Amino acid sequence: MIALSRRGFLGASAAAAASLILPARARAQSARMSLTATTRTLDIRGRAATVWGLMDGNGRSGLVLDPGQAFAVDLTNTLTEPTIIHWHGQIPPNAQDGVPDMPMATLQPGESRAYDFAARPGTHWMHAHIPAHEMLLLAAPLVVRRPEDVAADRQDVTLFLHDFSFKPPAEVLAEITGGASMAGMDHSQMGQDGMAGMDMGAMGQGDMMAMPGMDGMAMDLNDYNFDAYLANDRTLDDPEVVQVDKGSKVLVRVINAAAATVFWIDTGALTGRLVAVDGEPVQPLPGNRFGIAMGQRLDIELNVPAEGGAFPVLALREGARERTGLVLATPGATVTKVANMSDADHPAFSADLTQEAALRAVTPLPERAASSQPMLMLGGSMMPYVWTINGQTWGKHSPVTAKTGERVEIMFHNMSMMAHPMHLHGHAFQVVGVGQNRIAGAVRDTVHVPPMGMVTVAVDAGEAARWMLHCHHMPHLSTGMMTEFAVSA
Image (tube, rainbow, N blue to C red; front, side, top):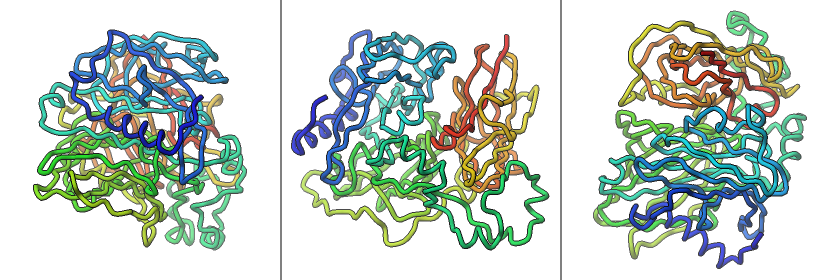
């Protein structure tokens, strides 16, 4: 492990940032790529922090593939612990999906493993499928460019988001699951309604609606206050400044790799167009603020004014004042410091499904009848800290079943007071229902289900295998909020 000086850290960060925006001809790659799980040192607010990472053969974080390039990667584990990497958004053969012992064992220290499959285009990412390892930042961007990306006269910029604690992940998880950290709970309100510790998963919707004082219940937006919120490994004390041209077009690829934080992406003075989610194109949705849950990705197109300037693109922690981000700046522009905190709390993204309901896929799934329509009740409580699917934790779960080629419509019905970003491995699905309304929504692999909300997704069952289906909130996952999509031939 090499500890970087402040200047060395900044230089390395600039090189890593530049690697995300180089043209294809400058990123010539050999037939096979290498990826190493390793340790690295970050400078976070003047304090050295040892974290983990996924570095390519040139020492840069993550991978960028050109159109048509196969995912031909040799992964080596140089860490002192066994781990395993999931290719989030890709659809590999099940054996290469990257879940411990399903079916492949973890990668031992010093071991290498080859991965070979057709790459799914779009903005994706890769991360350890062990919650504590992901919380150590063992994650990186995985961008697969389309021919349109190469042809487009625009600059690519990646915005990779993390929440970070100086404490070891085991200690953070112990605080959260033990009830010592209730960052998002309004204890007085919970006390008034007598709801603290109640298992929402055990209650029917009618019971919920009939309960006195229900209207006054608070959502639990955040259950831990992290030490820092990072954009491309940096805070707003020393943000990445990406040079852009006057009058140019920029595509910002936002990836929420946080363990337990939902963000708003605020494009500030630049009106954005949301053009893809989870790597799949959507009909352009204009706006200045877009929500993104853990595991999700947003592609936002921006136009830099002809007169130039400096333009912060910020990630705002929902339900709190913290923020992070980067700055797009034209040559010679004055870059002013942006505070780490806003003047007031940012609103909840998970309060409703307005954004999800407005999204429309450019290439929807073909219309067909569903063979089955299972409902998954998402439940749980803060005290005791346990999160369930249909009242069951992983190991006691009942799989969602299908045969290869069948259309299945899964309704996620959240009966808890926390939101759940639900991620399905090995498949892309289409959002076809928000609440009681049918829509031809976005094609995704991770959908955010707000408290007391309902979202229905359609999926065509793929390879006959066991595929994970889980909440991408790491403390929820670690306490059991996972089931499987069991596909048979």
